[in-house]
Image (tube, rainbow, N blue to C red; front, side, top):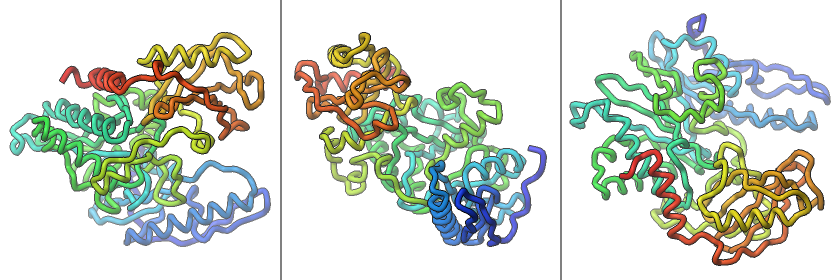
Length: 444
């Protein structure tokens, strides 16, 4: 942090030439990887720049005829450190993060992520109160936030069949003695996203109504329901509002899982946390990957109960993806009979006895990661390094073997019938959910 933030320049439209394996390619807009910010006076112009840059990137990848990491193009708003004048910027994530963390002094960071209308996003909350208005001191804030997150978790469980625990919530704090203020960003299992911030708002409204119905009026009162409007500006980590000094920082109760072994005080830790704190991790431009969007949640917009998660039929199993390590719980699941059935099914394949390495649950689907045995039915032998996993369709009463190998992507074995007496009952799911929730909110 050695130099002050630069004065916001006028929008630039110069072009750069990029060399590829097939020659040269000149994008319509600058290569955003080499230009930290393209600034505009109007938000619509920043969206247009991001869309055009994405189209250029797609053409660049196609002309190079080679795979490339998915570009993440952000649209942010920035308040000038001297005047407070707001402009909008289109930026490539990695380039912007370097600019933001290394070039902009902490006192000059007044930046906001623009949550573009109808873009996939993480569920987020803005919780705040003033002690003189709520009648509660600011040190009561974390306990009230925990109550809010409990109701959000229960709503996710009951409305969508998704189990989360306290460690899935990233909490950022910018409280002062005069005002308690926190932002919360939820990382769903397998890092799935909501289809839009409007859907997030619908679920949070239901959670607030649930809190009121349970008598948690104070918890309900601290949730700002006005932050789910179209193209919403949401303050970035490490930024403060213009004219104020309280910047968003990781709260003391922020789960350590978000640093994943990286020193939280290091630059790598700051970069990792910055990425994890984004509401729209896929950015503001580019195609909408439906396979990353949480199924059934859109029904919340109409106030209707979401449809039951679809069974893992052969066609849906073929589109399933390998589970991400961050979404899995290490060790056995709370359902020993099902664990033993899957362990035996995996052990019947040629090779050593299998063990349950990890598990996760989403809706009516349970995923088991397998250790010691890597036998894959597609290749009829053990994989040398990649693991296999079993996907259990609880509604359909069947399991299928899949694996993490790239060549086996989309493969699902023939269904393995699961006896009804082995499948967890609804009361067992409820008990498991309550146990996990109680780990971070006590017995309330």
